[in-house]
Amino acid sequence: MLQSLRDKIHGWPAIIVLGIAVFAMSFFGIEGYFSSQADTFVAKVGKREISQQQFQDTINRIRQQQRAQMGDRFDPSAFDKPEFKQQIVDQLIGQQLLLQANDDLGMRVSDQALREAIAAIPSFQVDGKFDPDMYRAALASSGMTPDAFQDSMRTSLQSNLLPDAISGSTIVTNADIDRYLDVKLQRRDIRYFVLPRPAPADSQVTDAQVQDYYKAHQSDYMNPEQLSLKYIEVNAANLKSDTQPSEDELKKRYQDEIQRFGMPEEREVSHILINVPKNATPAQQKIALDKAEKIAAEATPDNFAKLAQQDSEDLGSKLQGGDLGWLQKGVTNPAFDSAMFALQKGQISKPVLSDEGYHIIWLRDVHSGQTKPYAEVRDQLLKEAVTADHDRLYSDVAGKMTDLTSQNPGSLEPAAQALQLQIKDTPLFGRDGGKDIAANPKVIAAAFSNDVLVSGNNSSLIDLAKTDSIVIRVDKHIPASPRPVAEVRDAITQKILDERIAEAAQQKADVLVERLSKGEDMATVAKAEHAHLQTVNQIQRVQEDVPAPVLTQAYVTPHPVGGKAQYGDVSLGQGNYAVLAVDKVEGGDLSKFTADERQQLYRQMMQAYGGVETQGYIDMLKANTKVEIAKDRM
Picture 1 (cartoon, one colour):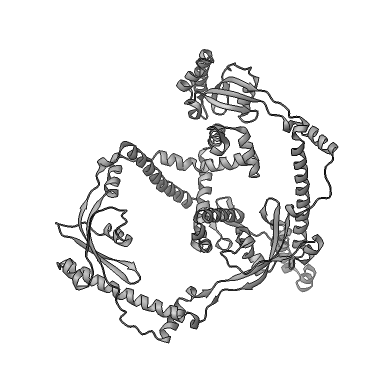
Picture 2 (cartoon, rainbow, N blue to C red):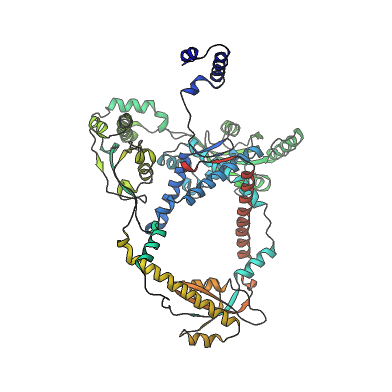
C-alpha cells in the first residue's frame, strides 16, 4: 500500500499522508488494525461488568426454583419476556452498586461474622451445634471447596450490609402501626347485585371484521417456534475401564494419603471477646486491652461462662457462655488459631489480638487425632480409585469431544465416529422446553442461542451433571408462523362477541351506578334488572363468601358521606358486572392485636420500609454511576 502511495503522490503531500499513517500506528498499536475486541457484558456498572454467564446463571437458578415450587402451574414463557430479563438485569445492577458502595464506605464482613453465619446454617449442625464433619460432607456433596463456599457466603453477606443498616435505621412509630392496623382491620357494610349477562348490541360478525381483528392481534394466533436436536453424550457411568488397581497400588495410595484417614485434632473452646474499634487510636486500644487483661486475670474454668455472659461482646456466643464448640486447625483466624493450639487442656489464655478485638480463650477439652487402619478404609480406597479412573476417562473423552466438535462446527459425525458415540435426537420442542434433555434449562438456552440456532454451529460442551455432558446441534427448525385465519375464525368471532357483550355490560352498569347515585332505590333497581340484591355486613379484606372483584371494589369505593351510601361497579369477567353500594365503614379494633403481634408487625414494617429506602438508595447510586446495558445480549 505504501509503495502505491509513493507512486501516486510526490513531494510534501506524500510526507503528510505517510506521517499520519505512522503516527496512527504508533499511537494505537499496529495490532489494532488486525484484531478487534468485542464486549460481552450484559451490563456494566462503573468499572464492574455483569457477564452473560452471571445473567444466564441467575435466570436458570430462578427458573429451577419456580419450576420446583409451582409444578404444573409453572409458565416457562415468562422467562423469555423482555420485561422479565430487564428485571433480572436491574437486580444484578443493584447488587453491584451495593457492593461498590461497600468498598467506598469501607464496610466489610468480618471473619467472625462469616464464621457465625456459616455455623448457623442448619444443614451444617448436629443437635443444634455446628459440626465440622457435616460441614465438609455437605460441601463435598455439592462439589464446593470450603474456600469457594466461604467466598460465596461473604459476597452474599456483603450485599446485605447496606440494606440491613438502612432497615436498622428506619423509624416506625406506634402511630404508624395504629394507622396500618386501622386500615387492615377495617370493616364495611355493603350491598351488591350481579347483572345478567347481556346480549351483544350486534350479534353479526362479518368476514371483514374477523380479518381486521386477526391482523390487529396476530401475535395471539401463532404456531410457536419449534426445533429438534441431534446430540452426542459422554457419561462416566457408561464408560468402562480395562484396569483395576492392585493391592499394592491401594496400599501405596493409603500411605500417600494417610493424613486423610486421621481424625483431625479438635479442641472444645469458649472465648470472651472485647471489641476494638476499626482504626482505633492507641488510647482506645489500651482501654480494650486493660479490660481484657482484667477479665483474663479474674477468669477461671468455674466462672468463665458467667464472665462471658456478663462481659463478652461477641453476640453470637455470649448467651451460650462464650461456647464456640469443637474447632479444628484452620477454622478460625491465624492469631486465635495459634493461641488455641498453644494451650493445654483447662488453660485460659492471656488476651489475644485479632481483627475483631481481644479474645480470652478457655480450652475446655481436646480430642486427639487417630488414624484408621488400612483394612478399615480399603473398600473406600478401591471405590475412590475406580471413581477417579472413571473421572479421568470421562475428562479425556469429554475433552476430545469438545475439541472435535469445535474443529468441525457444522457436524457431529467426526466426533461421533472418532469416539464411537451414538448420535441421538429429540422430538420437536419450543422455548418452554420438552422432555428429557430438552427440559434442561442449559440445553434450551444453548439450542435457541444465536450461535447454535442462527449460525448453525455445534454447541459448546453442556454439563448435565458432574460427569455427564452433551454437545448439541439443531436438526430441524420450524419458525413461529401465523395460524391460518380459517383455522381460528370461530375463536375470533367469539372473541369479538365477548368484547361487545363486555362493553354492553359496562355501559349498563355505569348507567345504573349513575341512577343510584342520584337517589334511586337499590332494591327497586335490582328487581327491575331481574338481579338478586345481597347484603353483607362487617366484611373484611379477606372474605370467602364475597366475589373477589366485589371485595376489592368495596375497599376502593369512597366512604359514605353524611350517611349516604357510595356506589360503584366492577367486572366479574366474561361480560358479567356487579353493582355495589358501600353503606358503612368502621375502623379496626386495635385491642385485638396482642403485644407480640404488634412487635411482629413492627419488624415486618421495618423490613418493608427498609426495602423502599434501600431501593431509593440504589436509585441514587445508579443516578451517580455510569451504567451501560447491552439489550442485544440479554
